[in-house]
Amino acid sequence: MKAKKKKQLKAQFIKESPLFQLKKETRSLIKKGENPYFLALDCLYHRYHYTHFGKSDKQLMEFMERYLLDFLDPASYPIREEQLLHEMAYYQQLLETYYLFKNDSDAFQKSIEWTEDIFADQLETIKQWPERFVLSVFAVKKEDQGFYFIDVRNQKKYLIQNVHVQNLKRLAARKLQVLALIVPIGENYISTPPMICEPDQIILEVFKKASDEKAPLDIIQWYTGTIHDQLIEDNDFEEFDRLAELDAMSEGPDWEAIESENPPFYSAMKEPGETSESLARRMLAQDKTLDEFIYKEQMLAFLVQIIDRYPQMFFARSNAFSITEALRDVFTDEDIDDEQFEIYSNFASLFWHSFLEENMPEEIKKIEKYQVSKDYWFEQFMSY
Image: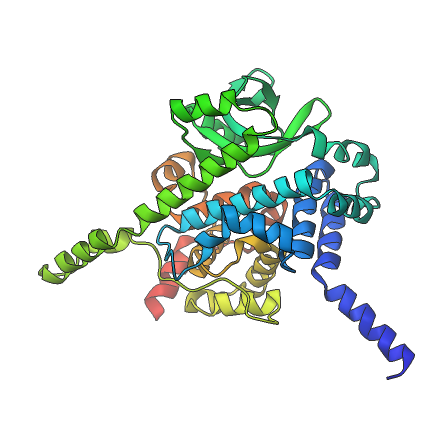
């Protein structure tokens, strides 16, 4: 093969690599005015995920298997609650970020070198994160300056800047606690996606008595146990079979129950060698109303952005139907208000809708000119 051809193929390979796309997308978001610190925390995780988890790094995989990966085996744990799957994806992000900061200084240094041309002005602060991160359970409280995470271990307060205000408002109003990993950006802090959790008083006392060195692993071990408990509850087969028998004996379909069921399942994971666009097209093809949508190409482009930016959310047990229903909402000219969210917050499609509004507001703003009315979708449903 001629040297010129080899050079061209190498350049094409680099352009198609996930790391090249990650850096390109990050630069683009900074140009659009996104906070570089918010992007840096996300970028460090995604780079580490590509270079180590994606290549089955032995030490990282041993750590992940101890605290999460066994639960992602659908043969052992056929998860029915899709929202739990998304929480597990957030947990995976927290675990990998923790391991990078705590146990993989070489990888962190390489990440710093890889990002120094993107985050030049923020680099000195970012370099401090492995020494200054806090992984804990936090209460959420509103004060004059904003919303604070309050560490349940020692009552230290951290002003949080990168979590959507509406989400913080709901957490504070309900007096809920969250598991998160936070890092400083000057006087304030930013967080990995917070996960609601409910340690009882006995567990809280254990956390309080643990040393600063030991507490994060105690908390991780406890949260892993709560996931196990949720999975056992989710897989109560005897109860599931009993309900199925009752359904079979009923005189007719229970429409109220049918309407409240989770959507049918179709995996949102890439097949070997599949591109983000091919996955997006395959997902939209599962719903004829979306596959024939008048603004399908705009919807497709947005879905490709989601897949590229949040690849950890597209795994074997992630349901494509929940994601595409959220897309339908985004392309519909009707707001989902707080009251609706409160009522339907257990539905995975509304979880996705909230997630996209929080994390991709600029992209959604551009979609507004392609939004259609609810009547459009009704007419499409009736035509099939």
